[in-house]
Image: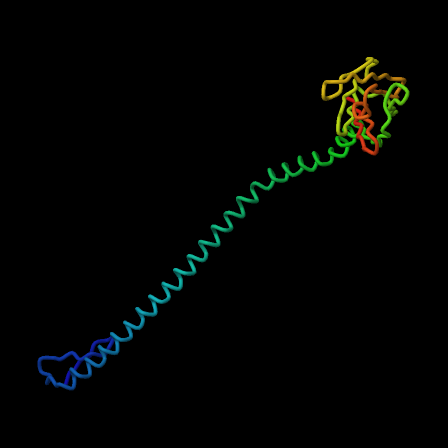
Length: 195
């Protein structure tokens, strides 16, 4: 039997005068196996903890990347706000621009009577004399806002004598109501341009 034992695990240590017994070795082997098993279990637990921590580190890294993206997005926020402000200002100016266009283009309609000739003139009165008038239907014509005496219609064939009296435009065609832009029951559109 061993006279001495190791301080940590209590393993047998024999002196030269001690008798060496098989049971001493068996006890030591049992202690060594228990210690090695505890060590293996500890290493396995440690590996498992390392894997868990690795996953948590990856999750944190992903979160940091997402947060970094959000910070970058926030850094561009002043530029986006400035761009949106400019767009809002542009939209706020839109009603006055539309009003300006509305003031420059006035539309009206009339329904043709089927009559034509100098005794059956078409007439349209405007709030003020426009720069030009566009009359559209199956045929169309553009009348300048000047005191010219006649105009060739859009098909280039017939003269349409016209005149201005104040803000009233009158015109006729001596050959046909279609060329006079006055076909029976046809709706014609007049666009007055104030540029």
